[in-house]
Length: 217
Ligand code: AMP
Image (tube, rainbow, N blue to C red; front, side):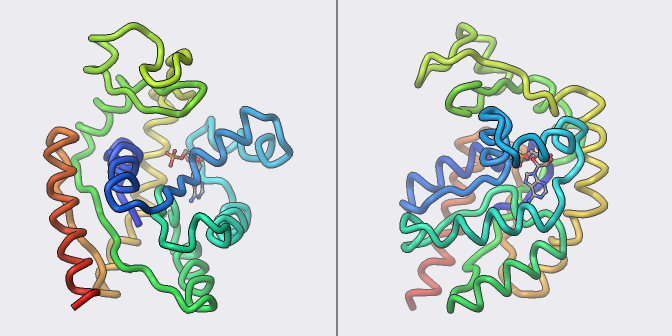
């Protein structure tokens, strides 16, 4: 599981981790944004919270994840990105995993200071079609279309300054307590995440390789 403030790099690192370790990437943010894009009932309900930087109610996201982890592509493991975000979600996840004889192997906490996340979020663009993430440095060098699918690059509505401030506040109040929660459970991997994507991924990989070796040995 990946933990960290908005803008810490969860989505970017999740893509790399899921590719290297061949595990399914589950992003509740991506699932919710897709529902909004398709105009489903879930999307309509979620949108009002998301655009303001608020959390979607626990029971909604818990239901989504409980169903998602039962899909066949999760049989060999999965990576949760953006879930859990509250202690209630973490407790519900523990229960759902225990019921299936599963458990979390590691919680990777991407640590980065607030000035840096504000800087990253204000420059971030995403592909409106495939959800690929582009930093301000990427966007500066390339045209405003996605390199992998050609879709238009957009600014997420919740990357607007007001929503960013609210998301950081929500993170501090509701999500940061999970650092202590998983530290107590003995599965927290602390990763300094202010460096480049490659530098951070090298540290994440070392840490996950250690976790893997421990679980095999
Ligand atoms: P993310 O892409 O992870 O930054 O999520 C974008 C937005 O989706 C969040 O600001 C929330 O409004 C909503 N969201 C995503 N995951 C969760 C979650 N686990 N619990 C509640 N809301 C969520």
